[in-house]
Image (tube, rainbow, N blue to C red):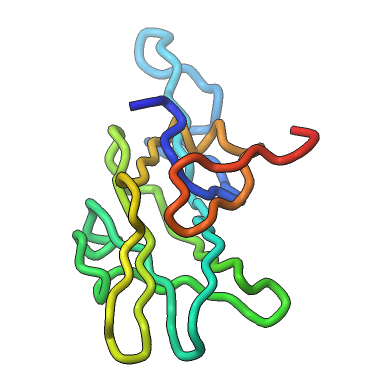
Length: 147
């Protein structure tokens, strides 16, 4: 897996894993790793009226691969077809998470992304400020111009 994985991060806040101030030394002078506290996932998805986009994945917060238990992203007439969601990432496993976006149609039909699982680690979340928003099913995020 690459360090950056694949996802659409649009913002983040940072905090150390143990609550210390960033940059402070840990035991025996070791530096504490900084993890994202909050991440915003986003995807571009054209949907039918009455449909919604959810994210599901490898952790409880994402429904453990059950789309109906995963959180719903939101959009509005000004931002459509961009769907987004902010998640508290403070308790995510250090090794990262896997996830996919799923469109839930009005009749309950599920449309899964037809691509490999997206992957996100703490390191990737910190490195992805210059990434654009991917399209539903797109495995490589676009690079923002001027980044």
